[in-house]
Structures are given as C-alpha cells and as structure tokens.
Length: 366
Image (tube, rainbow, N blue to C red):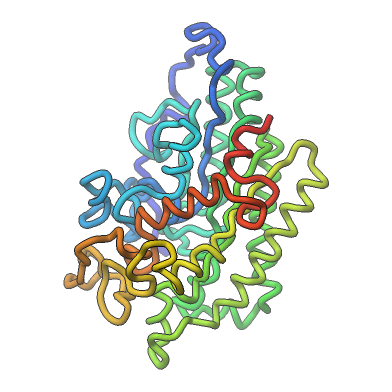
C-alpha cells in the first residue's frame, strides 16, 4: 500500500498564540458566518497539491478561465464553494494544507480530490473524511487559543459546514473491481458510508457546529467518465452505480431530518444536485449550454477518458474552445459556469431545490 506523504506545516501545533480579541476588539461582532469545507474533488481547492497522489489538477488547462493558471481545482475555474463564499461576502476559502495558511476566522477548506467517507476509498492517496475531521479539530483548538473560548464558540456555532462526500465511495469499487460489492448488499454498503458521515457530523456538532450543507449526490452514472467504465456498453449511463447513489440520497435526507429533530439547534440545507445536474445533462439549452453530455477536455467517447492535461498516462487529449458552453470540463467535473448555476440555485432556491433552508438562509440564521 502506498503511503500518503504530507507537506504539512507544523503550524497546527506550534503557531504562536495571538489573542485576536485584544488586537481586534469585537472581532466577531459584525463578522459574517465562516465556511468550513469538507469533501472530494467537487470542493477541493488545492489540498491535493501538497500530498503524494496522482489525483491532482495543478497543471494546464485546469484553472484557465478565472484564475488564468492551475490552482488544484478540478475545473476550468471556480468551484461551488468559491461561489458560495462570494455570495456570503467571504474571500476565497484557502486549502488547509496551503503553506502559511494561519488565518481561520473566515473558515478553511479540507476537501481532497478522490476522497470518500470510507478510509478504504483510494486509501493512501487522499485525505479521507476522518482525516479531514482531524484537521478541523486542530483548527478549532487554534481558534479557541487565539480568540478565547467564548468568541470561538460563537464563531463555530455561526459557521456553515459544507460537505461533498460519498460519490467516490460508490464509484471506486467499480473502478477497481473490488470484491466489497459482493460482500455487502446495496443497503449494507450505503449504511457504512452514511454511518461514517453521521459520526463526523456528530463530532462537529459536539465541537460547536450547528449549520450544515449537504448537496445530494448528482447522477454519477451519467457523467462522461461513467459512460466509458463499461467497455462492453460504452456510451450508455453506468447504471450499476445508480442504486447506491439513489439510496444514499434517500438515507442522507432521512439522516439530516433525524438530526434536526434530535440535536438542539441543528439546521441543514440539502441542495438537490441530482435533479439540477441531471437537467443540465439532458436539457443543456435550458441552462444556456450547448453541450451536456460530452466533456470539454479529455479523450475517447464523450471525452470520458481521464486524459485532460496529459498527466494521467495518456498524453494526448482534446480541449474545446469555450468551456462555458459545456456542462462538464473534464471527464467527471463540471465547468465553472455549471458550478455557478448550481451555486445560484442552492443559494436562493426554494425548498424543492435546497431543502428546509437554502444556503443564504442557512448563513443568515442564528
């Protein structure tokens, strides 16, 4: 098994304690809610740049649209959390492993491309959800030391905790022909994933978190990459993963409803990524896209082979002229423009789109 090597500064343990409440009296009085981000490549702002993994996007043409250079985001530009931060009047939330990242009052991004709720998902190549939780615990200790217990408690309770997790847990066993899907039924396997997510939510709640955002899994079976997974049926959606994704979304909704009943002050938003992206794929013109099924960057049918940038074994790849006309930038990840539309609908959409709270209401709630 490959070992995961981290270039992690020891600031989480040895940062000089600065009492920010003395330097900036009333720091949190008018401070907007912070944003703490967990998950996978849908949310990773560059953490994988600093670990030993092939799951990277720190090379062209990634980042070409907005940043004009690769940042580690798996898209041509900004991701969903970048837009949510903008709407919440926050700066771009930096990756946790970025050197010299010592400022956490606006939040921090722990997401890692390829990661899952299960430690076995791409083990040794990613920061799994429990590892991300450990990083958050370090940040919460730093905030308490810097701000004092009372101010840190206020910041953590006002913060929004945004997650994108689970998709890799269901795709990875099919990619690797794992026997795990023979050992566990769909119900049992989804139960393992939801169980780990439940544990992490409860630990964050115990530390002080109260407001959670959990977009549903989008139609994993119909992204360009999934359409080339089955070599005998290329071009069709990879329907074998659909039962896992569908049950996950049902169980996630039930879990969040139960936690809202059982945990005092618990609030959540559950943006319906599944329906929204399915609509973009099947009816792109409705959202002012020209192409919903073929990726902008990649090779093979639907450009579904992960070759964008020529760093994953295949050096030859195709690249479209205008990513904003496409729903997908590479074989599995949306363009900046698609993420922006998902963010706008999640920020201000009604209950059929976002659940009991849209993200705007979640940020503004006390």
